[in-house]
Picture 1 (cartoon, helix red, strand yellow):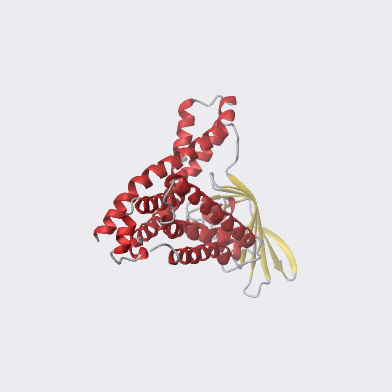
Picture 2: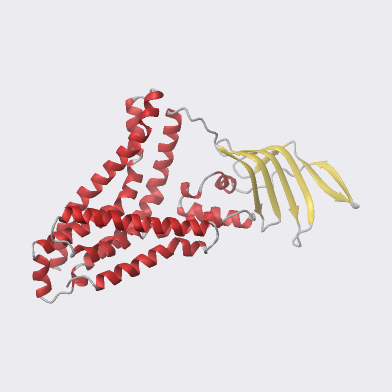
Length: 354
């Protein structure tokens, strides 16, 4: 439709300027918050610029919803101030129909935002953090301590003192095997284990078995039957927010099967999907505000955008906190603000000028 194309042409230049401005501000905030430490550690200028460049995708992820909100509100407000909306309404076209193209843009932006975070933001942010730690001499090890996981439908219980997931080495390994009824069958102890492409090679391993009701110890002969993938141990050494959506789902399953706390990780996993819907939500909210300003359009649109964004993020933060503490189900904690603000947005659109 001609009006749809006209609205999109009015919207996109403002959106490009807005997202560029917000990304630039976020980069400056990150740069100046670390500037003193960069100077104290004599970090080269090119290294600082490299660290900043790796933060651009994450800045875009943060800036996209508020940029969409500002651009849509400003575009509709500007059309209303120039009396173009009045002309459109006089022709009998409802406000919701005129604005439907912006809702489609918001939906597409939500889909794009999810894949942007899943494929680009997570690896680049990880690289940025690693470069920053090296530049600021914040030394760290690639590993995790005190890992406990279940495998083989719960019949194997792995206890690992330390896992180096760069070298693929387990230290302080204990493997307890039970039967289908949960009764003890054997226990294997090994100082370390190294991944050999398809299995864990246990070093100097011994096995404890009951023989005639007496627990006896023997050297472990079959040393190639323990083939749990390294990622099963590695996922316990990272935060769910550092993983892709698929790996985050596997982490939640690992934690649940191992009997470890998984509620917070599950809430963050659901939040990965619900956060992507933010772009759609802000578009609906911006449409409801778009025709309400005739003066100081840029200032009022920016103020309204920031206000709505702050309220939404506070609601989201509170909901996720309650989910992480298990006061509400994780799926409710992740999706409640989404549905709540969609309802609020639709209610406001219904009351918008037309």
